[in-house]
Image (cartoon, rainbow, N blue to C red; front, side, top):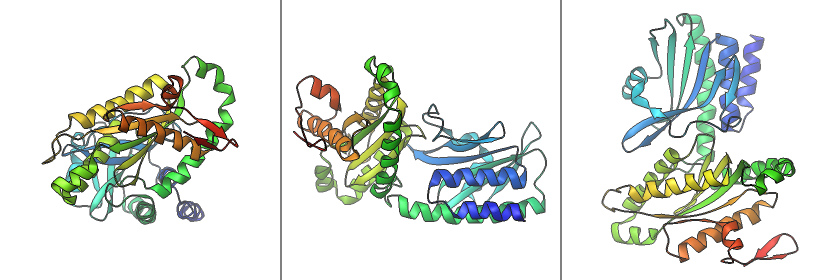
Length: 342
């Protein structure tokens, strides 16, 4: 009982999705004796559902995409897991199946406003008995309630992406961690080999024209589909935010400049090649910058300047702030080490 109370206190003390996911996996490992457990993100792309892990058990220890930056890209089709598909289609709270390896898997979708964006997969070497189910039920009820509360406060209601308020918190935390480790990476950075953190600002080209021509319902559909393409184009450890209107922000973790540019270009091409219902072709412009030891306001301002250059020089392109400055296409003057004037 004492161990159960400890985990319940830990679950209810978090205001962060990643920490909440880690706590529920830890609780299931300790209290249920799960041999394997995963928290999975579910997202839709081109009318098909995909899933990818956010937190999982690895060699008896809890791991997450926050700590492992070399994760998967697009996930795997939900159709690979028929028991979970059936569970969601029939709006069930859980489903159990026995695998060919004589393991027992429990699927538990987390419902939020008639939608499922998170699912738990719990694997055990023996069938789940009534006592285990009761303990799991209590843990998961608390987890589900707090997951829903966090989603309500952190996510944009239209696209399901993280909102501006959440960006401020996560970006400040990431900028602080970059500052503390920046000096050790200077030599690598000069040779272009360093894995850095990146910030990109995305804007949908001619979005006002889409709203004016086709109406706001189709404009909203474009926003939702762009959000789905963002999820598919980036890894689960990257963070995607809707800033409001037609603007999005991406925090890209631990990759080189060459790979960052390739990933951003791939997303731009994915949008350009997508056939949006009724609207047809839609394009985006993107400006990006490395997250350095400068203040968050300055870093975001640099990405905005790169985006503005892309928008005013043809649109449908990716622009890197430092490259524009080095080529003399952007000029900046530092005033009192805090504000840059262009």
